[in-house]
Amino acid sequence: MTKIRHLICMTMAAAGLMLSASVSFAQQPDRGDEPGLIADDGYQLDPEWQKQMVYFRTTEPPGTIIISTAERHLYLVQPGGRALRYGIGVGRDGFQWQGLLSITRKAEWPDWVPPPEMIERQPYLPRFMAGGPGNPLGARAMYLGGTVYRIHGTNRPDTIGTKISSGCFRLVNADVADLYDRVPVGTKVVVRQKPEL
Image (cartoon, rainbow, N blue to C red; front, side, top):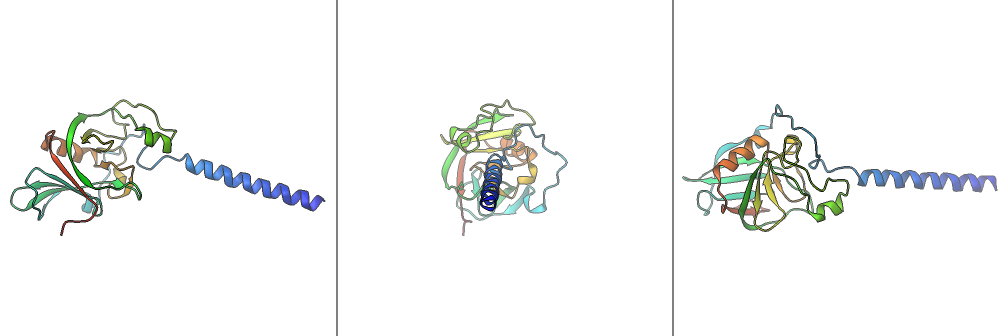
């Protein structure tokens, strides 16, 4: 009887440990959604993700933004078969999408209001956060159509080149400010999951 009681106690303790571990894991924030974290402005991007002018073949006119989620690059089409290429962070598996939209609104140091879908997945997130250096949207945001998606800055420069977001596209603050100054509201945005051939 004592052995059975001991075995039951051990099993319950192990189950409790697994339950607390799974609850703890579920409550961990996404690497890209860390409200209050101040970006490391001295962070050095890998050359692959640094802004640069590149040769780029497309039938889209200059001024168009083309996002390749597979490459984790955002291209701003320029005249003469070139584009400004920026390294970006994209949606994690299950949160990638493609489509044709336009920039409908722009904001400097935007406030962050996580959409209900994000709150449901991550209930620990604030319901509102004023714009500023600790805001996950970073220095600028460009809103895409009538969706919840944005091209925005980040307080986690180390996430550029990764797949971690809930579907938005993030750039380091210096790059998003540069892009923001180059494109007006109404800019065409093409989101592709595969590179153009």
